[in-house]
Image (cartoon, rainbow, N blue to C red; front, side, top):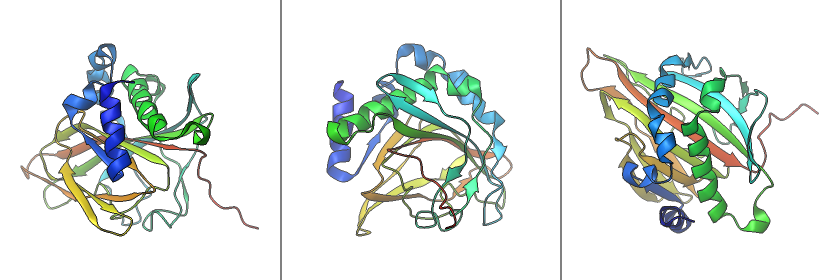
Length: 248
């Protein structure tokens, strides 16, 4: 196990989260994957509008995919809805949300596979062997938050929250003409644990979802006459997929 993984894992074990600046996180990806970064980042230009925003906003674009990840490899699951209970997402939870699927090119992209592998290595290191599932249920979200003159963009419109999973990895893909977008971390007792901003491509944060709340402040356009964009990949790991409760 690499030293970078051990350092990140120890930070998460201690505080419930670990911020990995780009220089540190890049070491978790192979040179071959990093060489393919431009085509991976370019896929954020082809995201659909999130039509499920209960606040009526149209500032978020996304695609979604689910995988089973184990020692045997990565298997993409059939396209399925994303579900969060209202216990975790008061704004948009409680319904099955059918987002446009991540394209096959992105699902099998060397960078995607590298990100999934990095998450698995860190989260396996933090999960005692008897407690590890045979295969993690992993969800990949491609997010773009947009802002323009007179309109903010909300990376976490539900506010300070947990995602209702075991582990979360957030990786910055691109940040253009953006003001703010500060990530804040709080403990389960709502004690403030830290703030940081994902500013450089491949800045990343790892979260133990059952130990911390997280939220990101609204973004604004630095130059009002130009588009502001914050692109991230959010990858969640849990033992089993969350499902909408069925009527009795």
